[in-house]
Length: 477
Image (cartoon, rainbow, N blue to C red):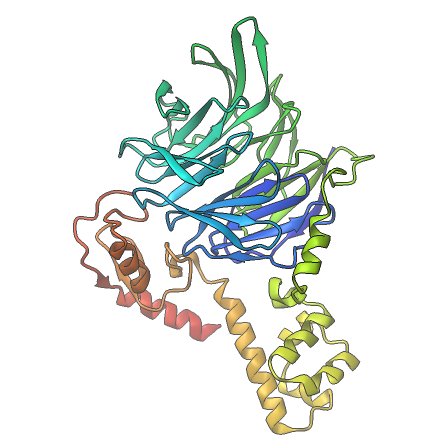
C-alpha cells in the first residue's frame, strides 16, 4: 500500500531533484532555491529556502554524515551547504565553467563527482575540496546522470545521446553501453547492496530515459553490463529513478519490485511530468517532485513502529531553532495558503500594524486577503481613506507578484526562469532575457544554454513581438 501524506508547494518553478537524509528532505528547483524539511513532520526548516545559485538548481544530495547538502546548477557551481547554519561552507567551480546537470558523492563522501553540459565529468576530493581529475572535453552530449557504485571504486554516467559509461575513480573508461536508452538517459542509480561470489562482484543498476523505459542491469567484473529487466509501464519519458535502502524497490512514478520486474503501484497525484524521486533511508517515505512545482510525500505500507527520525541522530531542527529565529510562515507560502497569523505578519512588515487588530477580529486569512475589495475594507471598519487606499495598493502588488510566478513558460527566460522584460533572440533561435544571455556570454560560455551547440554569433536581436505579448499578459492580470 502506498498513500499520499503530504504535498509541499513552496517552489515557484518546476522541481528538479529530491533527496533524503535520515533526518531531512531536500528539494531543489528551477527557481534557483533549495528547500529543507524535517523528515518527521515535513515542516520547513527555519533557514529554508537556501539561496545563492545564479541559475536553476538541477541536482542535490546529502553527505553520508548528514551534515552537508550539495547542489549543482546551470551557473557551473557546486555549493556545499552547512546543515547547522544553512550557510555556504564551500563553492566549487567546474574547470570549464560549463553548466552542471548532476552531482553525486561516493558512499563514504570521500569523492565528489559532477557531470556537465560539455560532456565532461569532474572529480574532487570532498574533504579538501581540491580537484583531482577532469575528463577530456567530449562534446558528444551532455552528462545528465551519474552515480557511484556501493563500493565507491567506480561510477556510471549517462548522457543525452543515450549511452551509459562505467568509469574507475581515475576517470578511465571501463565499459560503454551504447544506446542503453536510444532517446537519451535521464537518470541512473545503483542498488545499495551487491553480491560477491568468489572473486566476482555483481551490482544492480537502474537506468531510465526519454524512451519511456526503466531498465535493470547487472554490472559485473570485468565490467560487463547485462540487461536483466526492461520495464515499460510508463507512457512518457521516465525522468528519475531511485532504489530503496534495502534494494528491493526501484521507484519512479511507478513503484516496482526490482527482482521480478513486477508493477506494484501507480501514483497519479501530480498534474504534470514527475521529474524527481527519492526514497528515505530510514523511514517508509517516497518523495516525488514535478513540473507542477509540487513535492508529494508518500508512505509505503503502514509504517508501524517507524517514527521518521533516526534515533542516533541529533534533532537538527531543534538545533536550528536556537541558531536562527523562525521565519514567518508567509515567507515560504503562496498568499492563498496563508493563515490568519501569516496575514497579520505581512501587515506588520508592510507598515500596516494598525490594521492587525482589525484583521484579527474579522478572521482574515490568505484567501480572504486576496479577494479584499474597497467595499470589504469599508465593512471591516477601516474608515481612513488613505489607510484603506494603502492597504488595497499593497494587496494589488501582492497579487501581481503572485501572478508573476504563474506566467506562461514561454514568457520566462530559459536561464533565469524569470519573467522577461527585454527578450532577445540569440543565434540558437531561442529567446532570453538580455541581461541573462549577455552575462552567460561574458562568462566565456560560447555555447547555447539550450542546445549546448556553439553559437555562430553573439549578436542578439530584440524580440519585440514577445515583449508585446508579455506586456499584454501583464496588463490582463
